Image 1 (cartoon, chains in turn yellow, green):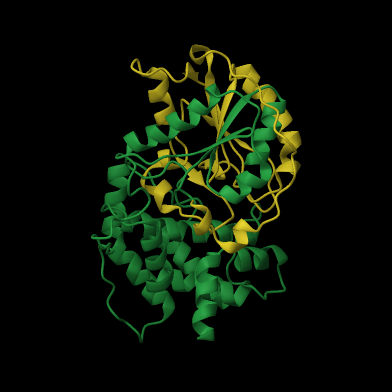
Image 2 (cartoon, helix red, strand yellow):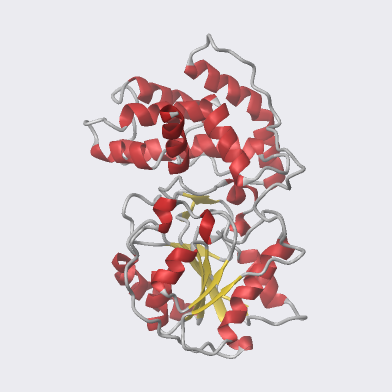
Length: 150
Length: 250
């Protein structure tokens, strides 16, 4: 959003302090394997929905992205975009197109596994889950993460 | 989301964030972020515009090649393919494909069921076109959802739920199902910004009125704290709550 369009309550929310960022150098473009981490509370239909204060995550398999549903507890963001086109929130197809494009190589490949947390939770409380997630990402060969909020 | 960027970068992953709230990005200093001008809920912008979505992704991924130190933050520059994203052009006025007849003397439950009947052909068209639906997460049909929510409005004891799932969660999933049904039906025809669709649902439909009524009844409910929290804070958008407060003051 443009800064002036952000609702007052959201703009003024106190954010945790993570200090100055540490930058990890990405590998060469052709070696970049990208995974999406969303905070839209996405689940595969039938998975456990996200509830109040959830700090865990769900796994979304690249080869089985159908039937994703959103179970974020907040009602303060638009869902009609996602309803019309999942790529607006979870751009897996667009990412795959970039990996396959011969015109303009921007990434090497797309990871098999992608992940969803639910925002509206203190990110510091997600640290243990992120430690666990890091192992899974490494196991899949992912070295770049695209963070997509909602 | 910025916090996840910090945590993952410390684990040895290069990250890039699509930033929706500039104030939060500024405060939390994520390693790399592309600020986008889109509405909350639409981080990649316009539905059904792959070219514009690819432009956003490309801009974000290009930040990986910028030298540090971080934070590396840039604003997405709209191009011809992304202009007008997230909103209906001014000259177009969105209208729901269905007009609901005025039935002031009918009860709320009957009006919701009538709306469901009128929207059903558009909902079915949406499912046929998209080959999917977000409804059904509660495990109920949409008619059952409407009936269950009406029963809950009358009494929390008459709306039973499965032993494995708390009443509050069934409530949350049921209202998500109801909203998804209306929005899928309303967007079976293209057009309609997030604001148009939200205003229509919350201000003009009996379905929206049913959720409003549940919020008003349950936000002071003492029998189930989780249900009270869900009703008070996660059922109706804060912007609509503030708007109604403002109108009542005026």
